[in-house]
Structure formats: C-alpha cells, structure tokens
Length: 160
Image (cartoon, rainbow, N blue to C red):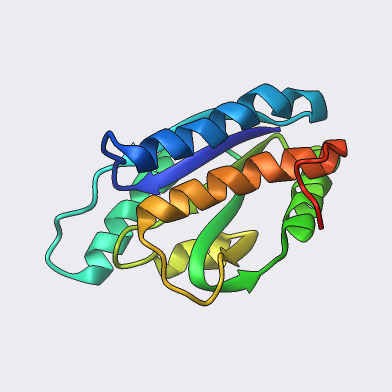
C-alpha cells in the first residue's frame, strides 16, 4: 500500500524537518517488508483567503487534487478519534490486507480541515487532547508510521 502524507504548510529547514525526515526514511526502508511504501510527501501553501471557511475549502481542493483515486483518507484533527499505536497499526494492516492500494494522511492548516473532507474521511484521528503545532504533528505521524511498520513486522522497536 502506498502512503502519501499531505500537509498544509511547508516545513522549513531545521530540527523539525530533520526529525520528521529521519522517521520517514526509517519507514521507507522498513515498510516494503510488510507491503507499505512512502509514495510521497505533499506540502501545499496555506491559503491566503479572507475567511477561514474559504481557506479550508481552498486547502481541501489542493488535497483532492493530490489524493489518488480510491485512496483511504485519514485526517489528523484534534476532534478525531484517539487510537493507541497498536490499533492504528492494525487499521493500516486491515486496509492493506483488504486490497486498498493508497492511503493519504492529511494535516490541515491553522484553521483545520474542511467539513466536506470530514464527511469523506475513512478515519479522523487525533494525537491526544492537546493542541500540537503542525510541525510537531508531522514528526508525530512520521514516527507513528514507522512504529506501525515495526508493530506489523514484530520488530522490538515498539514495546507495549
């Protein structure tokens, strides 16, 4: 299954980008052993529209353009469902084993994600009740992708 990470906003050079890159590289190396590959990271600029609703709609249009046809869509949103790492890995494994070819994980802009995306999403996931800066969310989801691979392959990285 090919995985795309979509993010509104670009990571600038620095420790956040380096750490996210490190986990994505680990995922890229370990993922193929269990049928997962990092297809790409798509970064789009934040909309400059005058209202939050218009910004969210414009950013959603960019996501729709980048999303492969038939892809599973997972939104990262503070109002989403909290899963533990084992449950997220299991869900990814189920989608993969069910023949799903593409998965897109989406990090919205400062205003959040368009309600139409919420309706279309296969899963809306939160990373806890705290609000996280988008740069840190990128690191956290990159690490969780790598962790999912280690769980699915029985690697000792993940210790419950």
